[in-house]
Image (cartoon, rainbow over the protein chains, first blue to last red):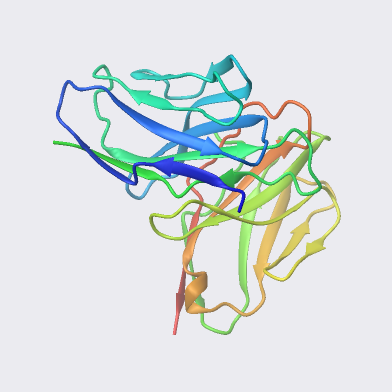
Length: 114
Length: 112
């Protein structure tokens, strides 16, 4: 079935380490997004990409990096420069045009820094 | 900043209609109103969207005011499983999607 797959679902990291969260979609969607969610908070946009080899910063891009080498993949690297990386991370994608135009989300990755 | 404003929380009795408001006073002519909901620690789920006409599907109804500056999501017979955070966002349809901004949403608690 088509969908968005995020991995790993749970991840533990020591302070000072970089970690990469995977996001893969087989929906042939053009645009992909990374959001961060903290307890009791809404979704905050980290980065987004509308086409391959292009991406833009969202509201809280500092300490994060992304790449979009393939349409299907939009990995997020949480670098050691991110001061408070413990959070729930959500990846989403959307096609350029559809009948519904809905945003599809993955199930999320929960990162804990020890 | 989010383009929408929603109440932080609401309660609803099981079996009654839940009416969730959303203000989007700066909405542009080509922007649709979308509603999503998020059950704890899961990815948000699409509910419904609309441009200017009222819409209904198997999950909910969407009422958009004539001036399009606000809307209401209606869950006609709320169940305990409808307890979730509901997000209202506005975005253009098709073409370049750009920056999709979510606010904090409304936490709906359905009580027995």
